[in-house]
Image (cartoon, rainbow, N blue to C red; front, top):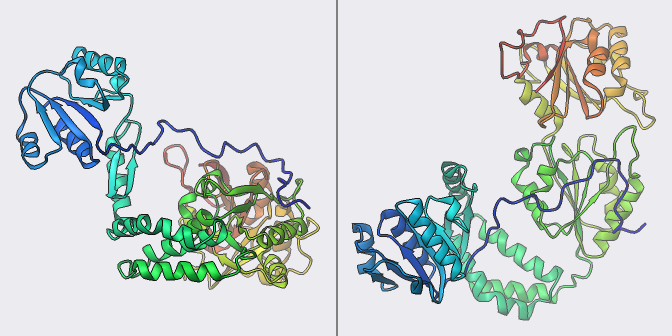
Length: 496
């Protein structure tokens, strides 16, 4: 089959590759450009210092300057102080204009004058007179990160900046400068496409490695030479990545790196849009959904597609919901790829059972309730319960059992457990769309499982948990006055 063909699915149309943006983030070159700042306040001084840091020639129009501004003027030759009030002639040849105005009338006058001169303008703390906004900045120049909340929550932007500061080592500044200095030399040594990608991805691994200061230009260029001599025409590989239950914040860092390095992403129908949003923008995304009871892509077609793409030199990410190694058919795919000599590795993800336990606030192996935990499929190749399950063992009350894909067989699961001797009052839970915005949960007993699934519905993936460990499951409802505390024998469905 054609590996570039999107496979059929009845899933709703996905959003555009780029979600809507409140503002366009732009990094503006101001080296040697004329910049206008009106006002002598602290706010104006900060903006003037920012412009000067970008290499602009800053012309300040203010009768008086505060102490901060006066110090800047003494220490930096890129400032020009004009004691007169700004005039329309001040905007001639300017690249940017900023003002700190006392009132709306002064702001409107400055804004109109800048716009008439065709100069982008920002009036500090007055959004209606701003054509652009300043973000909160993380400075590892030439690496610069700017955060914007569209003016809605500056404190939030500052909190985000603090978090990013902890993620980016100070040495990133020197690594970025090194990348800038060797780019032309690397391009001359290494051909475009997969070889050049391989070099720069190795560069990034070193920049964020355990000893980020240890590299030299000579060592990197030697690596470029080695990569250039390799035969990379068939250097494709496949990475099976666990996307977790849906919440993008539950992805591992390694999973995010794999998504950022991918050429092609073959994703399951259950992978959330939030997870896909973290993928490399240039990566081709192909839906290969497999859902019980719905039109699905055949496993053989997925295997053939991975082989064809990898042999074409592509880095393929097979993105699976949950953990690839838990009911994800990873074993079949790994065996198929290895028979073709295609490198394959696995990035584990958080399986839905673990996410369910976290959401319910229970330990699946609580020592007072369970000595073991097991994951059981509730769905065979034929769409019914698997034939060879040991129901006597599954009815053991001191073991926690999680049934995956058991929505359509919940009634049979209940009947088999009770027939094997399980007490109908044994605690049980049912959850759908775990960690997602439409998550639903039910807390009750084994005897009411069939009714619970009927009430929750099977449009979303269903997990069924059985065992004494769930006797302490919490409802998760934010308003306790709305719902009474759980009582076994009085099940209820909850939308969270």
